[in-house]
Length: 339
Image (cartoon, rainbow, N blue to C red; front, top):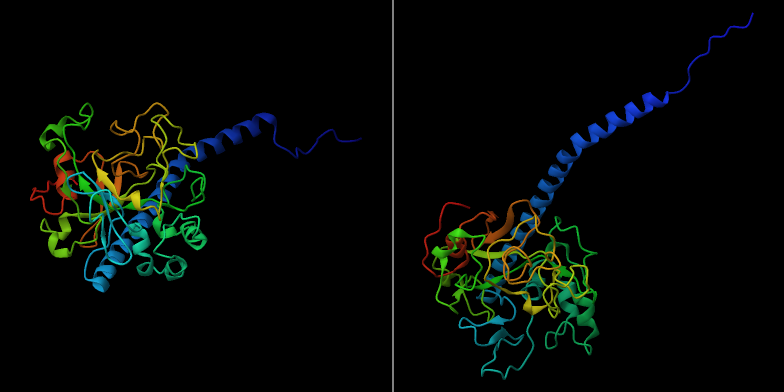
C-alpha cells in the first residue's frame, strides 16, 4: 500500500511572512547603528581633510613668509572687493580700478596639498574660468577629494552645472553678527551685537598680507578654516527660493572660485536643514539658505580647523558671543566654554 505521508520541502506562506517580518525588524534595528558608524567615519575623514588643509596653510606661510590670500572679499569696512594677484599686488590699489586676476585660497594651496600637476596647468595671469585659457578650465574641473566632505551626499556628483569641481571648506574673512541678524531663533544674540556695518577681521585676509603674529587672540582660539558645505553656487545669481536641484541654485562653491571666501553674518547651520534650504527659504534667514555662515552635514554642528592646526567640532547650539570670539583674530573677546 502506498504511503500518504509527504515530506514538506518548502516554507508555508505564513512562515515566509513571519521570516520576512523578523528580517525587517532586524534591519530596522541595525540600520541606525550602521548609519551612525558610517557618519562617525565620515566625520573623522572630514576632520582629517581640515587637518591637512591647516597644515597646507602653515606650509604656505613657511614658504612665503605670510599667510595665503583667502580669495576675493570685501575689505574690513565693506566698501570694496580686494584680492591678491599672482605677481604679489594687492588690488584694487584705487577703488573700482582693479587690475589683475583673483584666485581662491584653494588655488594658492595646490602645491601644498600634493596637487602640483593641477597648479602647473594653470596660467595664474588668467581666471580659472577664462574661455581663452582652456587649461585653467580643465584645472578648475579637477575633483580634489581633500576639498570635499564625505558626509555631503545629497548633491548630484562632485561638480556644478558648469562642471567645476566643488569644495566644502573655505576661509572666513570677516565676521559681522550685528543688528541685521535675525534673532527669533537665537535669544542669546543680543549679547553679540556690533554697530551696524562693523566687520571684525578673521585669520585670513583677501589681500594675503597677514602673518601669524597678527593672530593676537591666540592660535588655539581662532578659527582658520571651516566647513561651508552646501553654500551658494559659484554663479550666485539665483533669486531667493531657487531650488537646490536647479543648476544655478544654492549648492557648493567651486574650489577655484575666488569668491568662496566668506563673511560670517549668521550662526552655524545644522544637519536638519536640506541642502540649499527649502524652496521658500530666503538666504537672509537663519538656518535656511547656507549663505554667510559655516554649514555642515554632520548631526549637530560643523568641523573647523584652528590656527594652531587643531581640529574642533562646533555644535550649532554654540552661543553667539563664543562663536564670534572664535572667528575674530584680534578682537580681544573672551572665548566661552560651550564648544
